[in-house]
Image 1: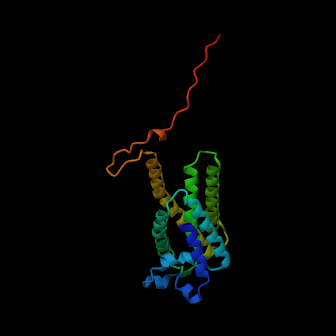
Image 2 (image 1 turned 120 degrees about the horizontal axis):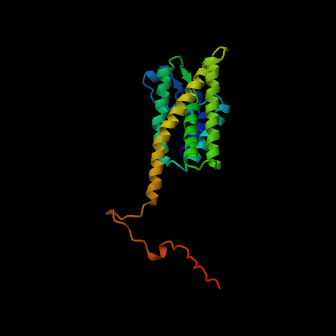
Length: 225
């Protein structure tokens, strides 16, 4: 599964030599000079073991939850397209950020995917629906608190806070965009399962009589004496 695979690879990268890790981290100067693979590999690098534990666990868990809604190859393709796009957006909007490690925006993206699948695909007030609402509330509370500290608080704004806010917002927006695409594919699979099977020429395949569902027999009302 893509999420579990990303988590395992992230732990493998953590135990590489520092020189090799430096070849994978986000570095603005060398990216602009042609090392484009860093737009993908930055999500495998981390600044601390605590950050690695939190983000890799979240990616693995969210990836397992997405397995019920998104096919693995669809998720891999979506992440391969979204990861460099988010990195390039950060490269464009934040020229002061020279060096970075982490997968916060990827966690936010997958968080939003799981959130909207739980909200849209389940009945209101069911367990899955309420879980989706809780995940949405947590995401909005985190971004809202960071926005308040960034724009309305009288405390001095740190660069790490601004970067964290940009990563979260970027990941959430890309998550909503990917959800729209994945949800269309998910609904298409559900509709395809409801259609009768067809052969290679597009003609309906006859179903044996012993496989037809037999409706329950209706009792005839008895005569009253």
